[in-house]
Length: 370
Image 1 (cartoon, rainbow, N blue to C red):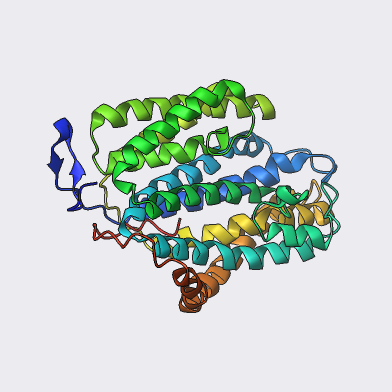
Image 2: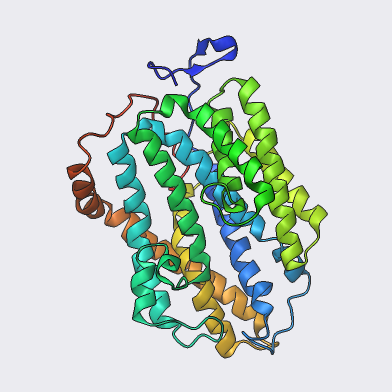
C-alpha cells in the first residue's frame, strides 16, 4: 500500500482503496462450517469402532459430513483474508495483543476442561501433566507430546501465520505484501513435490495463503499479479483437497467441486455488505465450539451412544456445544475483554517500543473475530 493508504492500480498508478464493510456473511459461514466440522467428527470420523462399535452410521448424513474438511478449508481461507486485510491498520504491538487476547484465554479454559473431562479416552490416551504443560505452548510435539485434543493442530498452523504477518509488520514491509505473498505461493508450489510438513509451505498452509491472496483481490491490487496468484493458490488447494480424499476414501470430484465453490464464493462476496443479525456473536462463538466439541463429544458418544439414540445424541451434543460456546464466548471474549487487554497488552507493549508505528490506513473491515 502507498503512504496515503491507497492501493496500487493497473499500470503502477494508485487508486483510492474501496471501503470494506463488515463481512457478516463470514460469521454465518463460520457457524455453518463449525457445525459441518462437528458433524464430520461425530458422524464420519466418530464411526471408528474403537470409539463405539454399536454405532454403524448415520445414513446420508455420514456421506455429506465426510466432506466436513471443507469447513476447515473455509476457516483457513477466512483467517488468511481477514488477518491480511486488518493487519495493516494496526502496529505490530497492537496486532500481537489482539491475537493473544483472542486466542490464549479461551484456549486455556477449553484445553483445561478437555484435559480433565477426557482422561479415560480409548484412542490416544492422555500422557499426564507433562502433556498439559506442553500444550500451553501450542506446539506440544516439540516436547514429545500429542495435542490434548486432535483438532488443536490447526491452532499451531494459524499461529505460525500470525507470526509471519507480525514479522512483516515489525520490519515495516507491509507495502511489499503482494510480492511477499507471491514468493510464498511460489515456495509452496516448488515444495509441493517434496511432501512433508514444511513450515509455511506444507499443505496445511495452502488455504491460508489462498485467503491472503483473496485479500489482495478485496484491496483491488493489480490483477496482473493477483490473477496468477489466485490460479496458483487454486491449484495448490485442489491438490490438498484431492490428497485428503485419498486418505479418507471420499469422492475426489465432489471435494474438487467444493474447493472450487470456495474460490467462487470469496471473490463473489467482495464489497457486499450483507447485514445479518447477531453475526458477530455467532461467528465469535465458533472458536470455543471448535476447541471443545471433539474429544468431549466423542467421550460422550463412547459412553452412552447406541444405534437407537444416535440421532438424538448428536443433535443434543450439537445444541449443547452451541449454547455453551455462546455463554463462554460472551464471558471471555466480550465481558472480560478489557481485563485481557490490560493483562497481555501491557506486557507486549512494554517490550515493543521499537515496533513500527500504526499505519493510519482505512478502518478495520471487521468480519468477526478471526
